[in-house]
Length: 403
Image (cartoon, rainbow, N blue to C red):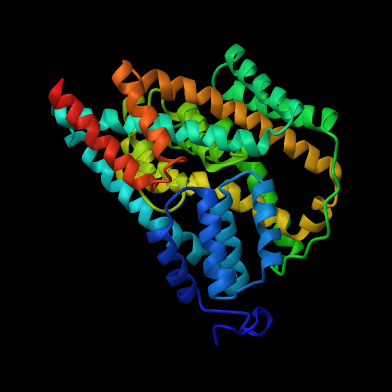
């Protein structure tokens, strides 16, 4: 049965089976979005044979083209393909729930973490965030800024943020990157590709696009009415603007929480460091932020609201795009726009590497040394991220005791 071709396998499964498959991945998928896509391919293309390599590659290409959490979008689409809308929901819950619960537990422990040892451990989490973000910037720069034009667009994004900090600067950098891509990057025609066998009707596609546009347009107008609307506005906007990789959510969420005074910089960076130590999607960092933020809703209610709000835009835009992907992908101009956008987000993440990540975490040469050790351990020695994060926290605690 294991060698049965993909096209001869049953085309559908129960939502319960989909949930079980994705819960296994939610408990074991360490390493970030790119690693998650590798786990998915091993599980669903090679082992379970839910789809073939060409279809999986086309699905990954779509989710990387769109804003949102690419690995979670791929999982959502696989669940939809395998067991309909309930399957899509089961895939999302199964893959997301373990990391969300772990980060919620960490958020509940944060008020109890006092004293020099706990403070040192939190400082270690802040320091390891420097290495993790630096690794993400370097990796994204290699793949998304391979030529002079795209490297220049990335630097232009940093200049834009230096001139206009915060959310407006990020929006401006992304828009200018898209315009520069359309005008200056030479389009390249795609090779032949397969069609995705995921049934989304035209009405469902239009409905998802209307809801997406409504959230983006209306929530900013409602944000002044209550903290709930302000929170929804911030997390939805962060989820809608993530291009190029899950780590890009860091500067977006910092602008929506720390800059508003909802979460302290120390708590923000400690949570981001802890997020690297758990399996599953990086977007569950929002679960932690929703729980620890000062104004209500917070705690469990805030965690649930933040989690749903940050994932919703990516899933809505995926549903809207599925019926039109073949036509969209055949347009060289669309590819040029996305190349410019992705180059700009490298600059956005690079700016975040300096502020708030580096400026808040590195206070002396000892902190810098620990950050460099973590940076070497991750890409050079290829140590598991959770082990590096745990080691940094323990080292931070030890440094505090000795200091």
